[in-house]
Image (cartoon, rainbow, N blue to C red; front, side, top):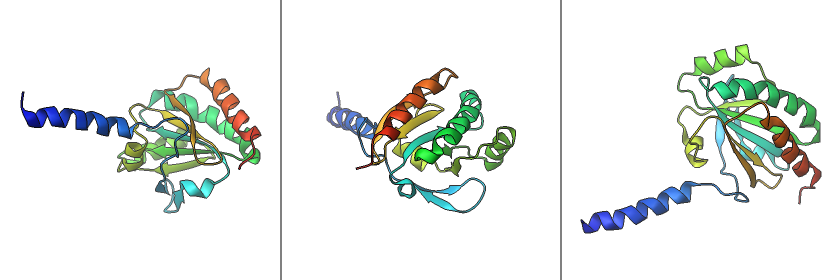
Length: 166
């Protein structure tokens, strides 16, 4: 076997594992534009809040299930320091806009057509979501979505909201 290949394989494996996010790790920072205007949002804008960070696309069937339930959860808990931030990964902005016409929400929807934030968060499936605590650390990672998932998600968020920001 080629010596370069023997060296490259372990390096590749190390670099791939370095991309994975672990619970308790600081959430990667981002600076993205809103889907419906040019206002930019940074993760640091939500300091001392519990965040449900959701990566989605218009073609994602589970996203159609999750958005109405997340909107209801956001309405219920936003006055306690909870925010939903949805990052759209569609290349075609009009598809995301059409999705939101069909399923309107009142939480923050951002756009990342370059996929840079998705790379930072090592997104492999849609939707993938992260619950981030008041200190900016990832406390829960959720892949996919079924209607029954919302009760467990709400429980995790409520537990974090009960803890005081340090």
